[in-house]
Length: 160
Picture 1 (cartoon, helix red, strand yellow):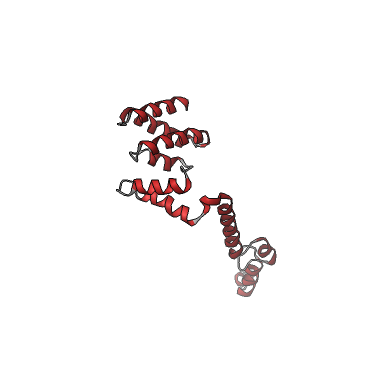
Picture 2 (cartoon, rainbow, N blue to C red):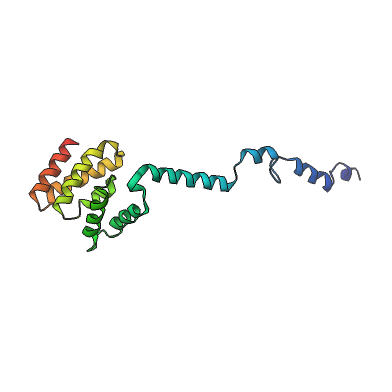
């Protein structure tokens, strides 16, 4: 019978679990430290709104729609028209992936503008993007139909 006397009863075990920091509902101190999910969501929404505000004209939904059209229409007949619509409204894009798509557009005017823009933003790119741009320029320098584009690509590649 002595074996049974040393063991705690179930009520005692439950009380110990209730006192544990790792079991049950969080205490008042931990609730004060944690923000509710709605606050996190609101702060994220505020940050997005501020980012859009500081982007100015390029922070609008219309910009996002035209920008996405460029990427989605690559390789289709409407690709050049989408590039023209975007550039007429917002100017040349500021990101390397979109500029590299424009290099495949076939329009000499847009390709030359994209090469100038790539030259200006090159220093701010990641090392992976820099390698991609250099690779793309070396391919254009060897394979493009227009001698103007080939020369400009070679000049741009040398200046990078």
